[in-house]
Length: 107
Image (cartoon, rainbow, N blue to C red; front, side):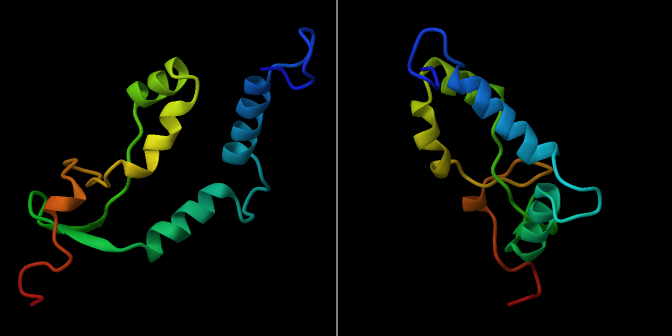
């Protein structure tokens, strides 16, 4: 798992972590950064009515510490399961499957 193939090469995971940090925290101040792209995406995303919170919210996927540990233990194979994680309410963590597209009075 080295970039140059030899034992003295630079580990690939160090490069991956570096590029990930640059993607998250890099960019010009006030420019079109990753954070701004995420905000724009959330504004355009579909809002679901959460029956627990009684509000319409944008549901998102959550990756916790256990997900990171499983990715490291399985040497990256767990990344293949990430698209199957369900979207959840940001406040009460209700899954998208139990939420509604329309709230009360919108039918």
